Image (cartoon, rainbow, N blue to C red):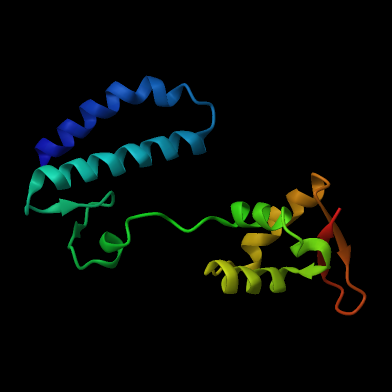
Length: 145
């Protein structure tokens, strides 16, 4: 195990300058995350039956749910909302809860309304959506700007 850690340390030192050249910490984390994924995949190919460790260090089994579904991830809330902007979905006023329900039904993505609210506010601030208070329930509704 320490052999793997030493190898990982050496590889991280080699890529540190490139990763640190990005100003966004989120981008840096994504790059490291992607590198670790690639390293795990290559270790898995080299191991041929020996123990495989995930990024968190726990042993992964072939019957492990995360192991089996390590393919494509579902699109995130921002991507889905931007896709909905390009359709006629926001031609009528929509509440956050109705947007969340639609995402669950159409995209199999179970977003909490708190996950969507910030993105919707940003889209409203960018004048892509209008944010209006409903007279019925005093909650915000969103419609194309």
